Image (tube, helix red, strand yellow):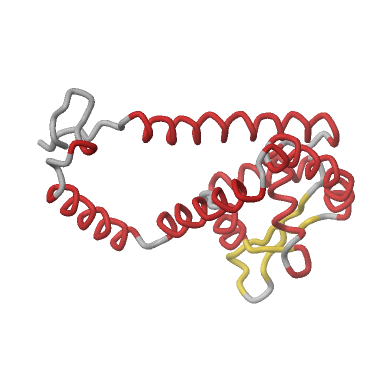
Length: 184
């Protein structure tokens, strides 16, 4: 059994900072969106990704990939949004087994109405809180994390093995010890 590599204070601060701010900011933007346009954060995101697509339509597979959701989660969300008239399902002409989600006229109107309040909320709760250097650093950090997590699993495992080997070679360095002073 491998020994646990506990997070040090900086690592804990970084991890918990990400977890808490992600939840706090998403909840704040979601509340603002709901109040301003009766759209949840998730509904806004789905509508925006459809609005970005040619002809305001995406296959379920493409939309799920863009949102980084399972097709099952997407299907349930689209069903709820269909009931509100925000989106519709359509068969894909050249492959009747596949379905596309399409932004409806009502969905487009609701999105257009929601956009100014949404952008204002994102600015108030995140963008305008940071200076340009902080935004640049944060964007660079997220680029690195997204690149890492969007690589095929085999490549990620290889990178972890390499990092683990490098860590083993450096385990006696004082800054790589766990909370109890054990080399990790």
